[in-house]
Length: 72
Image 1 (cartoon, rainbow, N blue to C red):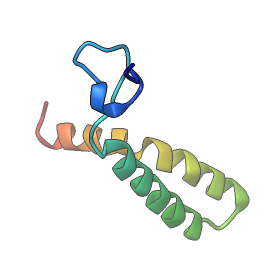
Image 2: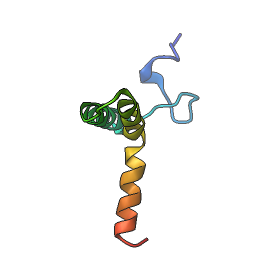
Image 3: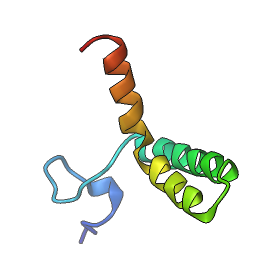
């Protein structure tokens, strides 16, 4: 009798999802770094709260500026 949940018996087309890559880890570290930067430079509590929001959406701002730079 084989154990179908072991990793050695995984077959292509199984119902398990496997995520590969380090994109989430890189984004997580970048989020922490941006949050620390914005909070350190905040003068008030609300500027710190705004900094957390900026840390969440900074990748979108970067892509917008890059596309704007290239005139797209």
